[in-house]
Each structure stands twice: as structure tokens, then as C-alpha cells.
Amino acid sequence: MLRNVHPQDVSIDPFKTYKRFQFTNVDSGSGIYGLRGVSGSIYNFISGSATSQSFGSYNKLSASLGKTNTYSLGTYYSLPLYYSINNLYYERFSKNPKLSKSSGRKEPFLSYGPINPNKQYRILHNQCSIISIPQRLIGEEIKRKSVRVTDNSTNVTFDIRDDGDGNLYDYNYSSSFAAFKSSSWDNSEWTAQGSGSAIGNVFYKTGMLIFTDTGSYKDVGLGTGTDGFEVDYRSTHTIYQHEYTVIAPAGQFNTTRNISATYQQSGSITVVEGARPHYYFPPGDNPGGGSGSYNSSYEATQFVENFVTHSNFAPYITTVGLYNDNNELLVTGRTSRPIKNDPDLDISFVLRFDI
Image (cartoon, rainbow, N blue to C red; front, side):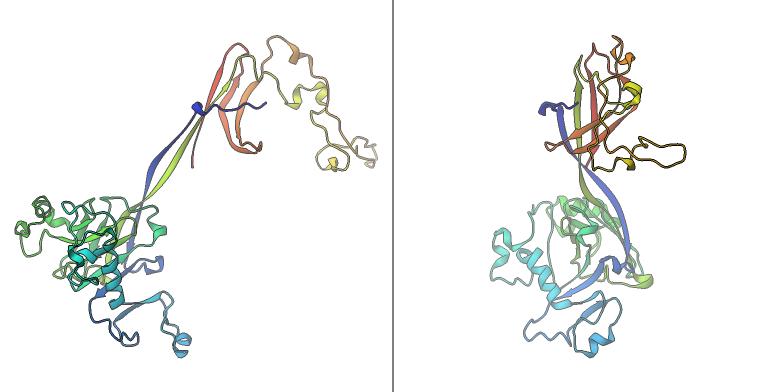
């Protein structure tokens, strides 16, 4: 008893869901790291003497073999990290451009993502600190205006948040930051030196929180122990709500395959010989002594009980299924109670599920 679903009876609507995450500096096993990037000469870079940060357990065997990566969670070097950040996000806005005259050029490849200079403030000095969040923990992107970093790297606890346009600012100076932003980034709006400025950027789709301020906030995301940090944000995942309207027209679907309607419940399916029906059906011949044989096949009945032929007979619908073109069952919907399929009425069922 199958029927095609008309395209106009199908609706698929996306909606975004958000999951909250909280991590601290001791959760580096999750892939969240606080890192330092420092500018300098890249000539004759030697990893053995370069400034770096290592995470995880030290591996003596790897060290004895002369391998550079001797920590289980990896080693990160400040100099190449700085230039990676510069190249990806700040080439047009850096004080150390890698490409000549790059700060005056408009090519999109010189900085990641679109930028509206009236809403986003980017500047990279000679150093930065980074909190990196892996893709599996942000989904499609970090939700805008959901980022909060609590940092104890100084004797003052910083409460740093994002403004929804990719800027990070000190929430304690939110009114000063709002004035700084609305004045097209005029630093005369600061309440004190650096207070109320944009102290960095968040790149929502890549999970990068970059702190570019070289003043009071230069060590944000780098502390440990009681001087550590906590990052709080929401990830984004799009779910698609599927809605199918299934119609049982009047006068259709008024038969049943329930075995209780067959004559003497004799069965409603045919099992061919060789299918080992004794796994599923009772013996066809079982003497009182307990021995006997099983039928090798069962024929579907051709007769139904008398009540099925009554003019008022109508089956009750409890389950509606959706099949693909290969007649494979994909979705099953069950009604809260059996619904009589009145032969004189069209009956509509709405199947709704999320993927």
C-alpha cells in the first residue's frame, strides 16, 4: 500500500543550533592552545634554539633519536607562528608586511575573509597571542557575540568579549570601545591608554582568537595555573527540518495485511521451500511425543474473516513510512493513538523529523 508524495507536500527548512563550550588552559588535550607569536628575522631559522612552546608528555625516546617533535601534543615555534598569522589574517594591516607595499593594496588574498573597515579593526604589531580552537569544537563557525575569555595573566582579571563583527574588546570598557568603534577607530575616545580599544580579533569560521594588543593584554591566553584563562563560546550547526504531508484519499488504503484478519489466522505470506521456516513458524506436524517434522513451505491464505467484508469495516492506521525509489524504508512515524481510516474522508498525516 504505497503512494507517491507530491513535491508540493514536501518542505525542508534549515535552522541553526548552538552548543556551548567552556575550556581552560589546562584542557590542551582537547586541542585548545594558548600560543605566542613573535616577529623577527627568518634568516637561518634553527628549531633547536628557537623560542617555542610544547604541550603534552615529553618523549625521551624521540629526543634520543634527534627528533624535533618530542612532546605528545606537539611543539609550536613563535617565529613561524607569527608569520603564519600575519600571512593569513593581517598582511594588509601589518607593521611587518611580507609583500612589498601590501598595506596599500586591496587584493582579497592579502587577508582572510571579507572586511568592513568601519566595523572591523585589524592591526598586528611585533607580537601576538593566540587561542586556537579546533574545527570539531566549533562546527560550522563560532556563534557571533558568544565569545568570552576570562584571563588572569595580570593582577586584574580581564573579561574579554567579541562584538559580533570580529573584534575582541575588554568588557569593562565596553562604552569606551563602542565610542571608539562608532568614531571610525579614533583612539582619542579611549578612557585611558589602550582601555576601550580593540585588543584583537576573532575569526569565527577558523576558531582563531588573536590578541594583538602589546600593552596590558599582551599575555592574554598564555598563563598557566592561577594565571590561566577560560574561554566560553557557542559552536554552530545547521539542522534541516523535513516535513512531509502524506495523504490517504477517501476510499483508499482500506484493506489490511494484519494476520488477525485472515481466515483462522492461517498466515498472509508465502515462504518458499528451502527458507527454513521452522525458525519462525510452529511445526506442521508435531505428535504428542515431541518428535515430528516441520512444513517445508507455507502458502498465503486466499480467505479473510467475515468481519473484514462488512460495509463498516475500516482499518486503523498506527504507522506511516517513507520509502525511497528503491522501496527502502527510510523514516517511520507512529501516531499517538490508532486512527480509523474513514472510507469517506481524506486523511492527512504530517511527518516531521530533523537531520
